[in-house]
Image 1 (cartoon, rainbow, N blue to C red):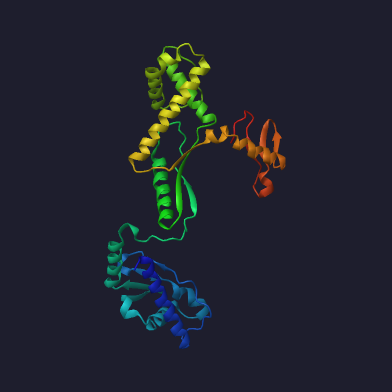
Image 2: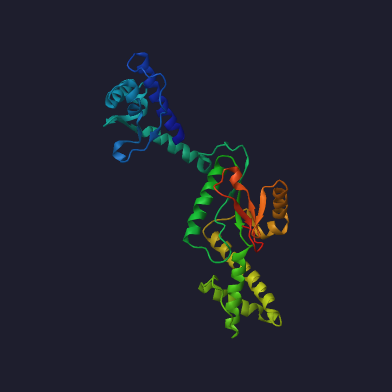
Length: 317
């Protein structure tokens, strides 16, 4: 017997009491309200609480307390299910279950182990759960950890009820932020080599950038010798990306988060899929060009305004 089954038993008992009272002419409401159960605010008030008496007050034109008493008087399973049934003003029904009910639940949990509570509601339908997905431009922070915990909990719950779940980390390894990462590491690398260059105004200033630049100097200095500034900057970008993504993977693994899929935005762009979608949208006149940028006519679909899909510099949003 699961805790859900316990609630079903209690709900069934309350419904039986309502129907019994109606047959006796004690209640007159045609259709009963939803019989929801909540945990009382204080443990001494019982295991479960119902507000059904208060929900019926208007249709019955009676005080909730009186309706609650009628329900109690008609509880046919009172002795089997409840240790205590009490009324709290203005008409709460506070229900304390017999210990044997919870003991049965505990025995079932012990017997079923890790399969307890599992179901097949999902019928093996495939579901993608994407979470964390922090830009690989720096280490994870506490907020990412919180997102990881919530994301994995969602994925685990979906698996437990029969969905075929794929957990995915969507790697934002394309666009302006990655360029800034490369420029930032390059500037620190040049400074370490006594060739200071201007640091980008919107660059990454964390101490980890200097640490990555030091690794570039230690591991790639001979490789970078004789390269143009643009080539060195690009190599700094790819090196920093690989190192920081590696650190992200290590951190996630350390606290038990593993993804089935690590999907690269750059791979999506490079495959031509994004451009194909844009071409199709243009053909259907859902895109328009304005001041060098391409816009999606999202206002035609109820959005408050149209949205940029490709900026003036060619970067996708």
